[in-house]
Length: 100
Image 1 (cartoon, one colour):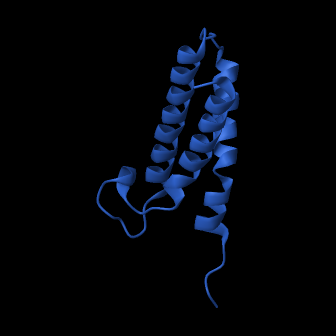
Image 2 (image 1 turned 90 degrees about the vertical axis):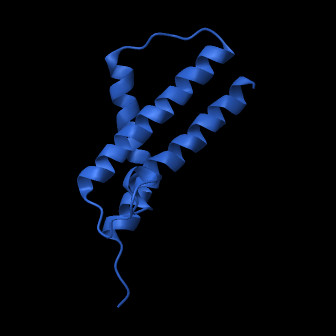
Image 3 (image 1 turned 90 degrees about the horizontal axis):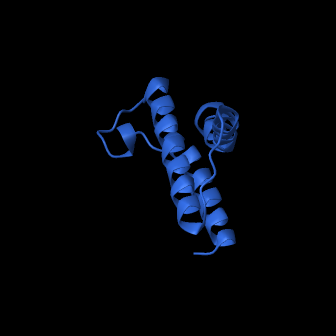
């Protein structure tokens, strides 16, 4: 896989995984259904999805070329970006109006 394809793959997977916890009522995406899933479960799923996306990026970077070590600032900015990419799902779940 070449570098531009890997970048697009990571971006698409990150956008999908950032929004996925808001669109399902299953615990950890495969567990039993909970009608109103608690916010804590959604935050845990969001953290796990962020780790999955980060792991995919690290894995692709190591297979394309040399992996570069990053400081804590990179991971803090990446987590903030991940939360920002999940904003459409948050709006859909918590801020949209119900049918009148």
